[in-house]
Image (cartoon, rainbow, N blue to C red; front, side, top):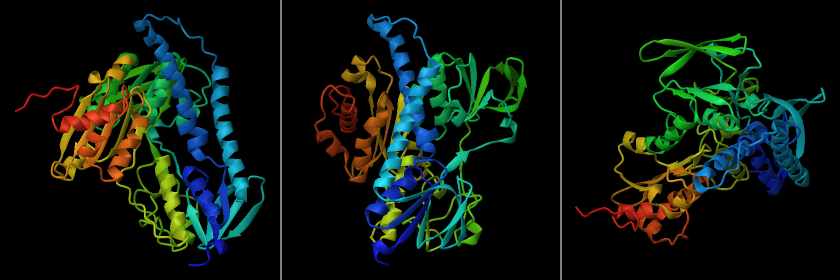
Length: 474
């Protein structure tokens, strides 16, 4: 391995994975060029994903709480929503963060090039720059971090301002009277929750037999119940056959997968949210030794190295889960490997969070995964109805669930549903990574009254000794 200071590194893609990799490489002394289409680093997450959506979800939560406050003797009245001001605030949040990443890149003396990069060969990247010029950049090592784009299906393609995707929905042009969300995954439910809180009558159509396919049913149950009461309609086991623009919006034909019955309804707007796919086309990978598998992901080893020894790949293009924090940690491992350090990407738990209300979060093995793998496990659940803190929030609609190895008491997985679940899951990730067992969680003193206590008490339930859940001896 060359001296780290002599390594010329190119990072293609400036999202959370790309800029994290570029920043660490610069900190280690490498000569770094970061290439991205945006003015500043940030990627989809900062510009059109995680950050703007969470800003709007915060607003949605506040609106919902003003309504719930009537149960506590406080009446705020109907909220007056200034859409222009709300949009400007969301854009301001994005602007501050992306200008911050731009400043950090300058402070680290990173050569930031705004443009689209394609590989000429395994040591040269051609960049078509935003100013209309182009340049070729020679490199010793490269990291591909081009992320993913919105998925599409023929029946859901209609060129209309009334058909939204996850990007255009965040632009918040107006609040439609009615909105159909196609896809019951986390992006669709998060954005549907925003529009519902702002005043739209939101309906959802999902092809499978439940919302959030793949997520633990014990957790989804609470969210489904809440959305059933707040959304206009949730249709499962159904698919969209056709969309047509008509006076007043979009006419949608929906077919029941079970019995073939077709229904039609006009919605002012339709939000299509059917997942994302990796961006590998148009990168010039054919000019390198990088391999792409049948699902469109670049194949990498546990140091994120591709089949080309000069090129690494991280984030959404390197496989599931497609999560910003996974990409960031992969970026760190890739840079450490390039620097010649002994580091591999072998996490025991990658947390996932759905920022609906209630939130859903999980890490490690889910119950379904444990069953598929034939693992021995015991479930230990603590209902939030037994949590004093949950009661003070008037939110008993939650659960903390541990998946435990009965022989070693090791924590194999954790699932949480309830307000703030995304903040609580970090303790679970640490417990799994550190090989903690149920006794460790039980004996760790948690502050009272807090929601974090539900993790401790779920561990106590495993031993049949939870203070706030009585289990008679067998």
